[in-house]
Amino acid sequence: MTSILAGSTLQLPEVRAVLERLHDLADRNDNSIIQQVLSSGYDWKSASPAQNAATFREALLPIAPDVGRFLYGVARSISAQRIVEFGTSYGISTIYLAAAMRDRNGGLVIGSEMESSKVMQATENIAAAGLLPFVEIRAGDALETLRDPGGTIDLLFLDGWNNLYLDVLQLVSNNLRSGAVILADDLNITPEQMAPYLEYVRNPANGFISVALPIDDGIEYSVKL
Ligand SMILES: C[S@@+](CC[C@H](N)C(=O)[O-])C[C@H]1O[C@@H](n2cnc3c(N)ncnc32)[C@H](O)[C@@H]1O
Image (cartoon, rainbow, N blue to C red; front, side, top):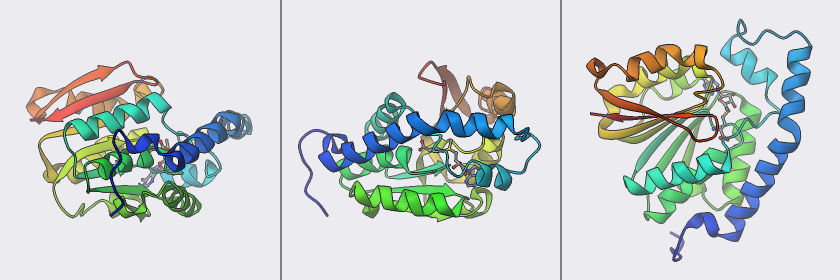
């Protein structure tokens, strides 16, 4: 295992270089890709998850840098050892989470991505950041690939298609430890799509305590009781 430097892995030149390059790429291209697709009349709401994944294969759709630092901070503060991520794309969020694994001296981020070209891109990017030993990306539909997360989950990050959040949560819920944190991105972007998920985690009868955080696109922060 590589030696641990004082401070955070997020400060390492190779990690910063990869994150800067990917955030820049997304800033330059994502909006025009999305506009092009939507102006062609493509109806993403009635398309299947796989159709949407293929249609948006060139778009990174990443978390913002401050969300990345928040993910890193939460992972460090609960000393997360096993993290499950729904929606890996080009690996930006995975890199922030894997940096926390490196700084706790071990742990695993299990990513998931159904678009095969993105799995390849993410693997290359995570390798360039030197964080591949802390990551396993499961290729295919997360509703299949995350069925067995291989152990107790400390942190679940939901960032795939928003209407699947509740399905993914329920899929892995037996593996969430008491005190596990669930972070769901895009609260303010697709409230309709997220409604069933929010209703579920905000109902105390379901065993979570949950609050909306005003970070970038909005994050629902939930803790399993
Ligand atoms: C918003 S992007 C993820 C961005 C990534 N978390 C980041 O910050 O860099 C959502 C990704 O989830 C993937 N996805 C959506 N539904 C999925 C599913 N059912 N299984 C696996 N991947 C899925 C999409 O292909 C897309 O790349």
